[in-house]
Image 1 (tube, rainbow, N blue to C red):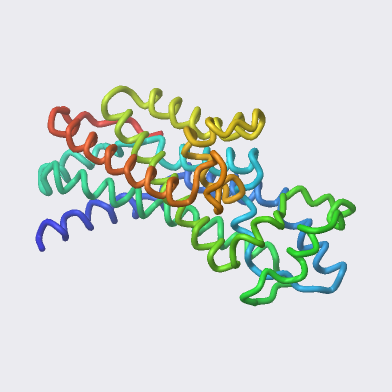
Image 2: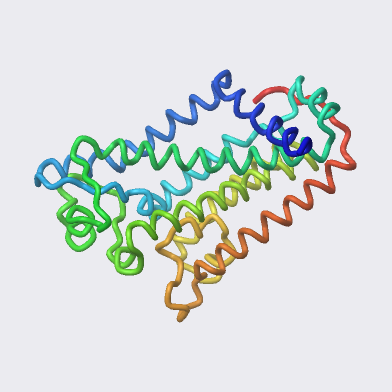
Length: 284
């Protein structure tokens, strides 16, 4: 029980530093800025036709390659200071032990990733106000945008997929989309953590940024093989095969591989921390 308390304490300490970190405020403003290009035009369309929109916008966000790239770059910005060893951390490591400290950092990455995507969900729904309604169905707004070009005159650039509406209920689409994005965010965070611990901060940021950009290239060349080798691409429900009849990755494949990758990175982090000298790193 004492070890669990130490792990939770190490995790919470990182979260408490958010309020004094200007990088987090910049990240929040950037996310809001990105979403402003995509969601307010839908709100204007909804108000023009006098039909409220349902809140199921999040699954569509990652259908756009550029927006997906920007959102995943946000994860890179969030975790670019991994392994989070500031002037205070050596004392924390001495008191808690390397293993408990490491598990605390891993817990922090998982929790911070979840909070990051919850923030995106919250902001995206908030932008649909005041013409917002709740329903367990997709609703007329999303159905109209998926089946017609009615959104063109309102300059709606968010891709709204009718195929996604056929394959998933709104609740299922939200749940799967959030799970996949959370696993990918955790994967990128752990990757940065491990690479920065083993090499330098530049390596972690470069590799994770390249992985964040890879889906944009995959969408451009439309290669089934590349989609299977691009974990960040799996954030988009639009490229996941629900029929198991194509070479595209399935949800089962995506979730299984992401869990496996995260477990491998956790094992690598445990291996590296045992051999690493603890050096204080300057803030980012």
